[in-house]
Picture 1 (cartoon, rainbow, N blue to C red):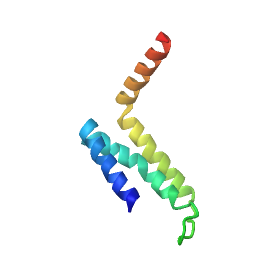
Picture 2 (picture 1 turned 180 degrees about the vertical axis):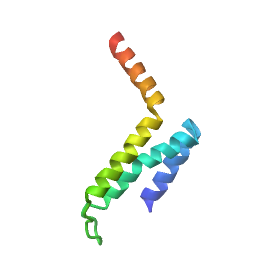
Picture 3 (picture 1 turned 30 degrees about the horizontal axis):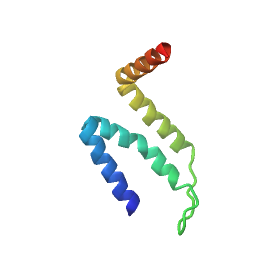
Length: 87
């Protein structure tokens, strides 16, 4: 329950600071991680096995998010490389 509360507080903070579109994209990126968490040996749960469909679906999801945000990703990369060249 505390993880759920922490997740909601972080999502609300993200909405306040960067906007709803970025927050929804960040939460979409977290979907594969939450599915992967169920493969761990958790108390009272049997570890789930992930198949090839999970890997393909994760790849499609992440590729779509990167393509959707390619301009923003390019801007961040150019800022980072500019800072690295100055240092």
